[in-house]
Length: 219
Image (cartoon, rainbow, N blue to C red; front, side, top):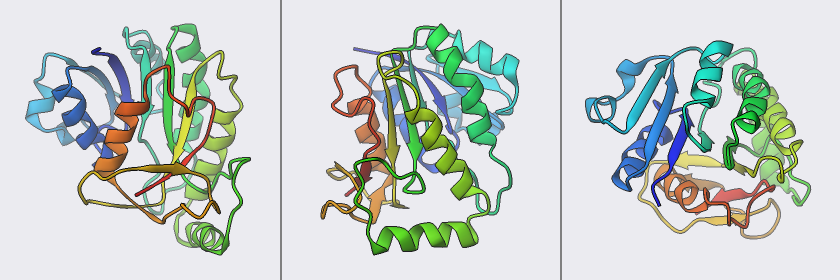
């Protein structure tokens, strides 16, 4: 059934692929973007796309998009290399209460292994990855660690959330996704962006097995 999706991170590598695929499946999109010019014309001019140009810290814009009629929230937003501050985390602190107030039935937020899920067993490769992020990733560790803590603090009966954590990303074709936890033996280090798109569209329903959980995705 076609859904109305509020999407953050629409102009990034995953977000653009998601827009294309979601529209091809008949869904409608409300996009909050800083630079609409980064969207291809076929997305900008689609009658099922509503675009709000805004920064993430604009509370009035967040209120508008939360009350747009969308009922599913998906975020691919994240810090860019070398960024400072926690803009995405600060935005979500304002947005999540608005999602609940506007009766959103689902929220799916991209995260990373910087946030450890309770089910994780860890491992050297994940410790090394986190060290690398801390050294060269600017504020990415603080951003994603805080984002994981925030999202997972919500009662899934109040808002059916999933924090889907991703490893190193590539541009390959869509492939089967393994949703697991670190140290499981199935926890690979790579995932294609097209695979994330397919997985989020598949799991955004209210019957997902990953509601209230923070799986690690890989191919």
